[in-house]
Image 1 (cartoon, rainbow, N blue to C red):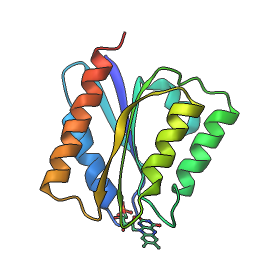
Image 2 (cartoon, helix red, strand yellow):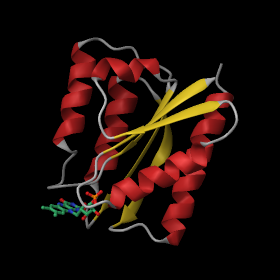
Image 3 (spheres, rainbow, N blue to C red):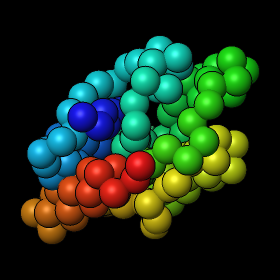
Amino acid sequence: MKKLLVLYYSRSGNTEKMAKAVAEGAQIEGVLVDVNYHVDSQDLATYDGIAVGAPTYNHDLPMDFKNLFEEAAAKGLNLNGKVAAVFGSYGWSGEAPKLLTEILKNRFGMQVIEPPLIAKYAPDTNAITACKDLGKKVSETLMNTP
Ligand SMILES: Cc1cc2nc3c(=O)[nH]c(=O)nc-3n(C[C@H](O)[C@H](O)[C@H](O)COP(=O)(O)O)c2cc1C
């Protein structure tokens, strides 16, 4: 059984809706999906893949994620080659998913599905479908990764 974590931060619920749709789409046979808004850094290594949802506030990544990934790096956590995907709601500039993609790829050597999936404010039905598709793609990638 492969293990996928859908981790998200959300203040007004928009990225949370995206996260729930990603998790729904990721439910395929052989993949166990956890959805959470907080994990300890060492827990990240217990998953085969992670999908992270980050809304943009003040042109930046949420502080929780900065701390989480800085701590993971400081502890020397090995996420090399693991599958990742990034998504997030935004209002006008949407830096967070790009910043997160850079961190997961360049600092941790993760195999990130690109481009990140973004939705302006509340995800509409098209965005929800895209989230489900992304979840499915992550799980299928996990199943095809030894
Ligand atoms: C105080 C504040 C600052 C924000 N800063 C940005 C920003 O710099 N760039 C941007 O694209 N959206 C910005 N937004 C818009 C949020 O990204 C948008 O409302 C998003 O849907 C929030 O997602 P959430 O409901 O998952 O928290 C900001 C919103 C607030 C309330």
